[in-house]
Image 1 (cartoon, rainbow, N blue to C red):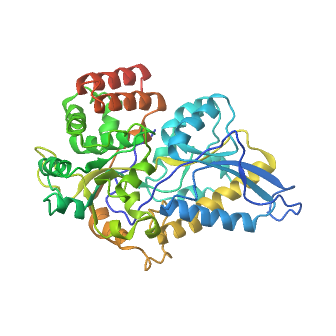
Image 2 (spheres, helix red, strand yellow):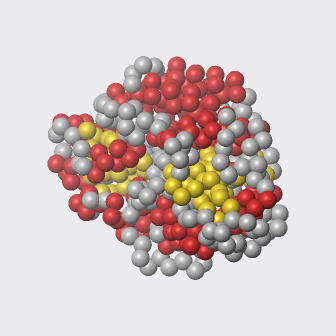
Image 3 (tube, helix red, strand yellow):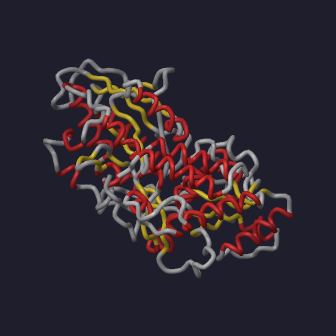
Length: 449
């Protein structure tokens, strides 16, 4: 899979996920008997696994639901049967469907799954989907299709880019603990954690039931200790998980866990529940994607957004001040893929869906809602963006040097081993050296190239 090109300037941000459950889907429009879509010979139904959960408030969720509503209104002869769920659920559901060869027509896909799904013959190359309109693919911003490019072909259409691993601070709670500024160094962060603990408040919210949050922490620290290209260097055997740069990353995570920095139930709650802990003032800090800052103004309690500051993770030991450009995991990671079995009217409908739901119109809405578009948006109006997005655009995005995110570059089998090793380390069941050896053993066994 190709390496995503570094991203040094970004306009806004993103996040979310989805699924096709056995319990049946939500039909978004009644099947019409009239055929109005050019190219269709009869009305058609498309089964779609999507992650556009109505209770999520990220810009990409809002934008995609707006554009899907427009699509169903414009094409009454194309019925979408949507099944929706969270990223934590889809992480298990989609590979399970793939193993049974039961993927629906269109489905939410992780870039890391592409090699296995392609090998089993279940993915339609997007290049083939748009043989009649190659300009659709060339219209994406540079690097945005890289996560879904495998052996020269594109197997998924991203709906947003993600920048990961920021720290969010409730300045009221910190002030009550005697901390009056955002920690600038790792030592200052540890001091703030210790001070907050004395007040009886949990320092940092963590929701790792879906296992991706600990991987986000690991990736975020890895790009700082090993460089943004660390995953490509792993693949070329220039690095091993057992090297000192990873011992430093995982050592930091273990040190925080040993300080009881995280909520005790972090393996039992997901990221949405962790957000609620932060909203409810039950924690002083939270580590998550930039998408958290970009959540709709209505998602944030006023008294929390007003006292929240977010920044890059503080300077690591020996790193110096976090100033200028900062290595940060950046990825497309999630996208929509198309079943290789599509043909006839279903194939025609899928082409229309891809172009109208994931093309220029969607990206303009996404940008105007504060998300990071994956296609240029010269006509977007940014005048209504919330203050958090403005801060991100002016103070964070220009400083980002894009780096690798472990979820978007390694297949699911390795990710499961990484997740288990991370959680066992945070729970005190393994030392970093042992956990990293587990990761390297899985990497060697998979023979990743």
